[in-house]
Length: 601
Ligand code: OXD
Ligand code: MN
Image (cartoon, rainbow, N blue to C red; front, top):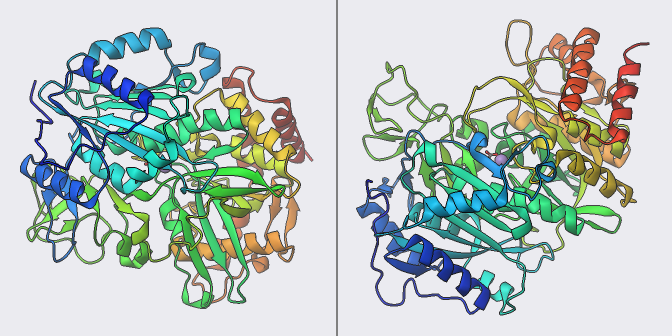
């Protein structure tokens, strides 16, 4: 086997931040006995440690140095070409019974899975360094904050997790010495990065994650999809809170009225762009601030929902990012960023499809091959990524560290739909809103391996991330609603509707604030709307479209309901619910019947 992660020898004072908690020490010892590493490196997340690991990564070609004048403190990582996205087909929820994992998850028996993984991990870290990373998800003083430890043999993981989480001392302090305290056990090994030995396994009852055979962020930064969403959603149901695949943004009017909204879109549908939205000139004085770009943990407070972003950084899709589309994102990734699978210019700068300016005459593509504008292949992988600290974001919300979270006025669901679904509409009430989330669908993207552009149902954008039975998850949403005296309003948006000739009808990006404004107007009770069978729809004059270069016909098309398309859509909802095999709560079945009745009139 090619040695993918040779051991490193740290100088004194680096790699020895051993925690005091006995339970952690016992677990690390057990894993070291199994995996047989050359040495154990106890991470503290310090600047000095990071500098040392970067230097070692450069020596071992795990990272490539970028032009430090153009992108200071930033590096390029190239993954194995067979390892560029999440692998849903190799992702498992290992609950005692299949029924607990439910119809949307791959299930495997926990005892058998532990045995199989132990077999794969036996001796897997021989000749490698085993890193132990303590980290915390959520602001330090949040009641929702969670502690995790990730063991890994990948330096890329250590350096990325340092950006994506609150790492080191802060986590150890919060954990304390109580051996019975709640914390997540995360074990990752690259093995030989072979797709045939690639498994991402979750054991919710044990608060444990084991990921082998991959180096791709979504599979190996165990804090993110694995803990904050899959294990997180399981814990959230047990502990009466919510773990959701949602961005959180603040929007402030020129008069100083501020609202927060949370929005669930499937992977690679523009959550990061929406969370960093830059209002167009007509919206001078409006301010959008980012609390989070991917995950929201929400709890009930004062009869409403309050959200925190459990993460500390952004792991975003690079292609399409430009100063023109999102200057906040560009400024965020201009320094202190790890790029994965983008192209390299002749002067060691980064490049990707959709970046400002003309493509350079020559590049090294994401696989390390020569590239010219005549090449057939893309220079950057469509799922190439940046990993960047949230503090780089010029639009970071001032309350991002507030432990109690920010009060959510509206929840937005949305997907990538070329037809059927209007630009925006509002649910009649919470339970109808849950139905909108439960029947959400989107055209698939490069964020996961598999066909791109196929419409699939992706309830609440959680299809790949709900760590338990989806029927119980729907019920949990309904149950939370019953406890809210001041629930957020629920909306559905679709930035991606196309005309008959295949062109996007809506400009998207910064112009989405026009939709956001209507949503806020509705929350404040001032926005107009028409009652339709699918919910409250704005008429064109309810939206502020001033100074927008858009055809009246396009606006009509964006807001219209085509009865034939909706008949098909409702049939698809039924087919989806039926495919779940009887787990869908009656309350949602009733919602579907009411919706269908609305189109029979
Ligand atoms: C992500 C994803 O990386 O959803 O956020 O795939
Ligand atoms: Mn995501």
